Image 1 (cartoon, one colour):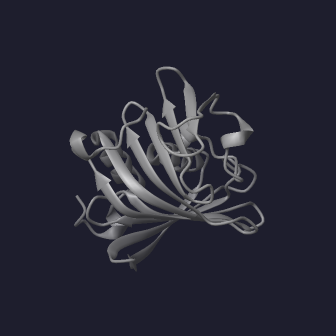
Image 2 (tube, rainbow, N blue to C red; image 1 turned 90 degrees about the horizontal axis):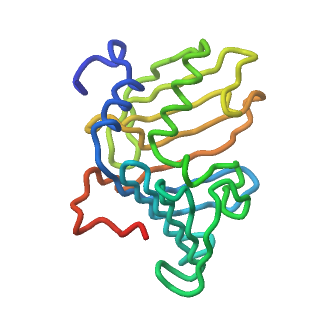
Image 3 (cartoon, rainbow, N blue to C red; image 1 turned 45 degrees about the vertical axis):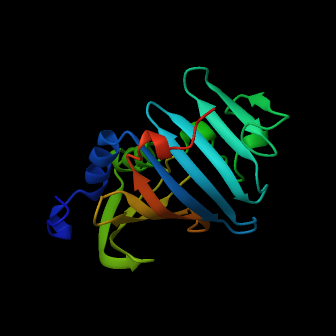
Length: 202
């Protein structure tokens, strides 16, 4: 599947199929946005929607864990399992990013859902070509919203899909005035991590 010519592949559909097939993943997320402090997080995801975020910066040492069964987020300000802890709703502004991202909508599947919604509303795709991101060979795709139909506040996505597993390893988003919103690098992505190596989710 990943050896097909770029122009003959639906990179978003390929990524969706790969996400649908996986059980879990762990990754280091590095996010930059204009006017805000860079964010670096050790991120873990396990189906059907468990999320764990261990902050490297800012708020070094803090951990968030989302449980889809309870619909709640547990926050440990000083590290996983330490005292004190808080139980919060995922829509609490205390734990949303400056861009309004929620813990329960932070996984790769949620990103692909946003991109697919933009395409469903008549968005345009442009295959840029093969590029290197870090040490990874990737396929670079631009998805632009149809004017007047901005999905989730994003007018344009640039996505770099890893040629080895098909999932995005870099994402850049822009608003309707072409102002940059956020750039996210996904480093050291591990898919289907053995249970013994997967960080607990609380």
